[in-house]
Amino acid sequence: MATHSVEVPEQHHPTGEHDHHAGEHPAYLAHHFDSMAQQFAAGKLGMWIFLVTEILFFGGLFCAYAVYRANHPEVFVYAHHFLDKNLGALNTAILIFSSFTMAWAVRAAQLGQQQTLRLCLITTLLCAGAFLGVKYVEYRQKWEHGLLWAGWYHPHVTNAEHHGDAAPKPSSPATAPTAVQATTSGQTPEPTTAATAGEHSEYPGEPRLAGVFFSIYFCMTGLHALHVVGGMIAITWLLIRAFQGVFGPEYYGPVDYVGLYWHLVDMIWIYLFPLLYLIH
Image 1 (tube, rainbow, N blue to C red):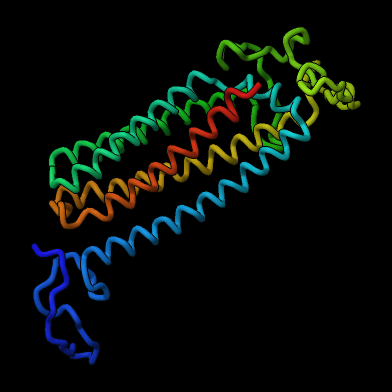
Image 2 (image 1 turned 90 degrees about the vertical axis):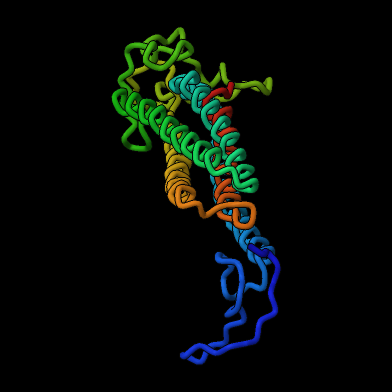
């Protein structure tokens, strides 16, 4: 199957539209492109433009994170202990491995290795499902312990083992970090715990506005999870087309585009994991 443009006489459709590819041309070449190379370049440019908008979107969320952290460092130092870093690390490993299988799928499509392509896409899809499964376990833990966003934040944690070995027991003031403990600048900040702010708190030492952390946590991880779902839909579509034998050395653009998207999803999580789970 040729990949270069073929000069053919211009013909007319019954509707009066011109057809520049009425003769022999690649089966998957859209009529408004002159060659497969041009079609691939246009598709890749479009995907990069889309990815830039995604980076700008998450960039705004990261800016919000930076602003809140700068203004309320004690909140982030205190609340991040309630995240299970083991589950976060597991999800990081899953996504990195899925990026590897996705890149392998692109290469398999370029080489026309149909069986390898299908296997890699299936593996990537299973990894995405595993990621969401782990995320569901984390969300369920937060829901059961009232560690939710904004006005839904009503913690009732009594056993730290539900949140990993680093989680403090809010009912124990000796282990709950305070604003004074959080500072690293050498300056002594004003205590901002709920108790010192005159607000009622079930847990001594709990910073005021502790729920802000979980608002940011659910916003950023929830939007990321939606992008994972979007990736799963795209990979499922690729898999169906792969079983139809569509992709090969002359037509692998969609696999490449989805691969770029999946790498972005992976990269965003690589930033989210240390910022939310490992911060001190």
